[in-house]
Amino acid sequence: MTTLTTDIPPAPSPSPPRRPRWLVVSGLVVAAVLLIAAVGAAFAEHQIRGGGAGGPEVELSIPSGSSSHQIADLLGQHGVISDPLLFLIYMRVHGGGPFEAGVYLLHRHSSYGSVIRTLAGGPPTTRLVIPEGFTLGQIAARVGALPGHSAAHFLAVAGSGEVRSRFQPAGSSNLEGLLFPATYPVTMGESDAQILSTMVQRFDQAADQVGLGSASATVGVDPYQAVIVASMIEREAKLAEDRGLVAQVVYNRLRKGMKLQVDATVLYALGPGRTSLTSADLKVVSPYNTYLVTGLPPTPIACPGVAALQAGLHPPPGNFLYYVVVQANGKEAFSATLAGQEQNIALARSRGLR
Image (cartoon, rainbow, N blue to C red; front, side, top):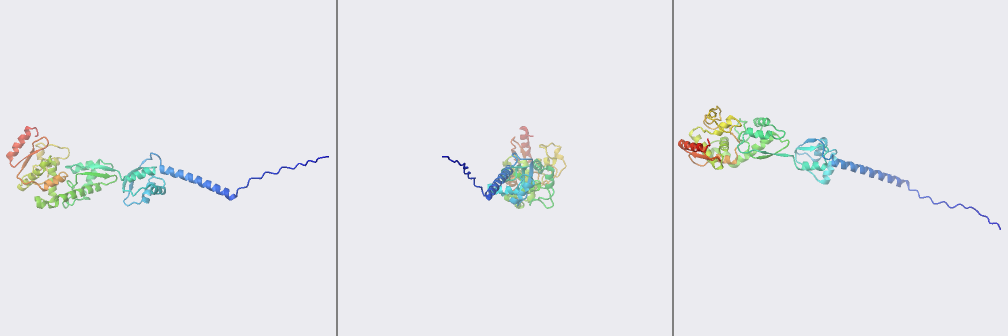
């Protein structure tokens, strides 16, 4: 019996199901979006971090009343940041503002965090220390040492009449003695006129507190003349306990028509740098030489502090007409007679003080 064999091919394997076209497209779109997002995030992160230590220094002035959008635009214009909109978003997320008006020192390509920290700290300030007894020239030298200022310009503004004290005589543009001695914070970009205005306002406030406006009733001179007296007290009295007695001598001499003979006024006439007098100095021709001219000098000779102003307005009663330093610490001896003064001078000489 013959067996027939038939070759039957195996059944084909089933092909994998084809993905719908929309799914493929969606996948590509998602991948593209993720890639763009990753690139965008990396770019934003680069902008936010800036250039590490930052680039060249930039002086940025923020006007008063500037909004966050305006500040962001200013930062972008000066190259401190690259994207003002991204900076605003960063501020919204991390916090920041409002910021104080003024001049700031920043760097190009700074990180957003460092920019916000700098702005949040306010404009950089410098301490301006003005001691009691400084002259206008000495004050100008201190201001001139600040960045962006000069002593010459400060003196020019002070003499221009742009800034005035309420106690300044009509027609006078001299601010000598009318700037209050104190410590002032000075911000970058602050003008000389602004510094002067602050000093004059502080003086006027202090003068009001001590009753300078009533000088005519209390000591018989006008308020400006009382400032002149206070400036002499500031320069003459080395110890607080002597201030009132120096004032007493000045007013007693004025009432008697005697020359004041105040050394500090002659030193003022001679100019800065002089600390002692010779017999020739006492003959210098100047309205500030109270050894030659009767009455008060034409202006104050220094900036008086509150204590000197008070002493000039409230001298103790007495008949002293003379004083001289008799101790190394600056202590004065007072007398009502020329004979008493000569004895005190002899004591001062015996101690090597004259």
